[in-house]
Length: 101
Image (cartoon, rainbow, N blue to C red; front, side, top):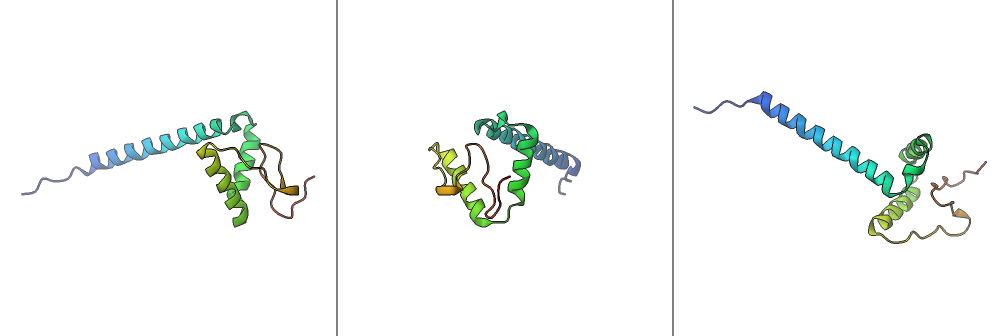
């Protein structure tokens, strides 16, 4: 005869593992914010920038951000954008066609 599974303990173990993974992810996001220097930003500004980044559909813009992030993780200096598309240090570029106020 087979030993019956203890489903309750298996579910608890899975829930504990999921909780630990979520806590690790939150901690890593906090470390990323600090490493990028974004911890000096106001929480509303940082939240707004992240919301904007999450809503952007332009793949060219996202690819530029991805390359900048990859450069950051490699420890290389960031290359400024060319010409009029340059953004002040620490700011997200505006979507193409958007004028600044």
